[in-house]
Image (cartoon, rainbow, N blue to C red):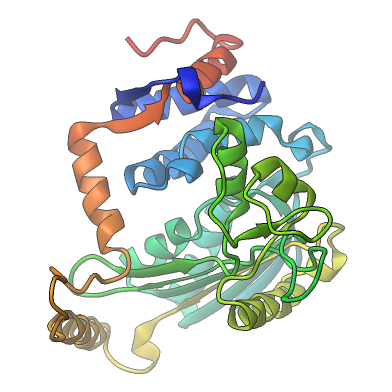
Length: 341
């Protein structure tokens, strides 16, 4: 697919159901079975509903263009397993599909034994980490998901990438909506970078360097160079910690140095679940009631904005760039005469 230019583009609104159908029909010609296409569509549509456009429908284009899609795919295999753990080889499968199964496995083991840790490598493009820990939190579990991805981020002072964007996500059950925390350790996620390049949009200042190590706001130059850590040495230290967890998940055996770790913890290992939910909810309310500076309307809790966006967009629809819709419809037409009408 060709690079897009937003100068002649427009915004269009689709319903969540239309977005889901568009994603499924764009994936079917790529060799995805219907149940697999639906699982990936669930993921990207939820990202779009939560307001993460670059992790939403444009992600399907990234999947279609990804070189590993055309590689050899094998069934997921278990390399080592105990009652509370498993180490898996993903067989070069799509990461959103692999993590869909990993999350179910972690949930089952934690429900049975109180705790679970699953590591997997040899997968690619796992999507939005909050999606998985939210599933665990909705099931009454504390979730922790870490990713050690291929080198795309330069350490402070370096001119070449050495670590991945290496996100960490956590989910906690409360008496209401889960508390979700999802953050990359880089100043710019590469899905965002790819979306900006596709749409012809510049990068913010101070988030990337080019192949010569010089600061750049050009996405194409940044793809040849590196992103920078979020928060300088602090973000670099967190990225290195995620890399350490990635080694436990098998990244040392992966040519791209990718390792994905998911932990699930039953709070009643320490206290009754109802008490945990109540105490955490009360803590969040105390934080929310912190005296505010002039002009600050509210103390915003992580994940509240995403949940509010999800509710709004389920009612009002998802806004997309017309060029993204056209590209997905072109892919869908390889399978069927799909239409949004």
